[in-house]
Amino acid sequence: MSRQTETLARIGLFRSLNAAEISRLDTQCSWRRTLRKQWIIDFKDPSNDVFFIVSGSVRVTIQSISGREVLLREINAGEFFGELAAIDNQPRSAGILAVTDAVVARMPAHVFRAAVHSHPDVCDQLLALLAGQIRILANRVNEFTTLAVRHRIYAELLRLARPETHDARRAVISPPPVHGEIAARVSTRREAVAREFKALERAALIERRRGAIVLTDPARLQRMIDEAAELD
Image 1 (cartoon, rainbow, N blue to C red):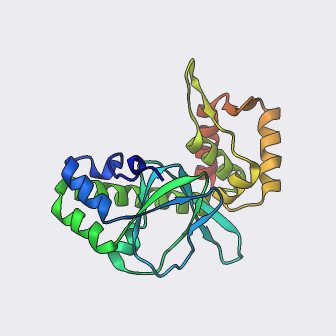
Image 2 (image 1 turned 120 degrees about the vertical axis):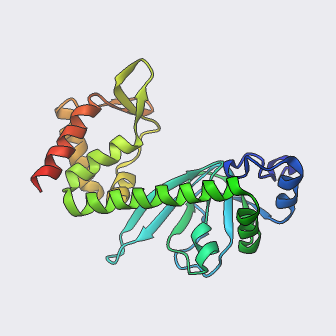
């Protein structure tokens, strides 16, 4: 692995640190290259280190009581995971799977906590991140308890989409997720996702494009979700 890739300089959490402070943290990490579809952490893993994604992307998953895999979120280059275990020293609450080949820095919990305590900006960013995760989980709990599978799929498509460059009224998901991935995100079966995608295509609410899915009327999808929530 190139020494140039073994640095935390591009990790947003450490944006306020100078080069010497970054270099010191670099030397306190262990570095590894993880292959696509390789598990980095298993669910209930007892370690409490923090992992920083220097390149590539990984996926956070949990298993439901029924054994179905539920996809919580993806973590991309510049982001990190494992902070909860570093804070409370409890077993991992989720498993981490590499979506692509990735370069990962593994930082001991005591080094991470020292960095948080020593640098106010690092502390503020961590607090903001944790608050954001709580809000996301609260929204997901609300969706799972109030929305049918159909509307959970709509909500997930809206989360994954970004405004189209030439028409802000439309949105694009690229690369397009496979049905199994959407199913894992909303805790259903891929057959249900395939059925809803066909219905959305018939209603001209989604279009398939090479390398992308286009949401032709995101505002209408959101109204359908809101109306379903009001009827609950």
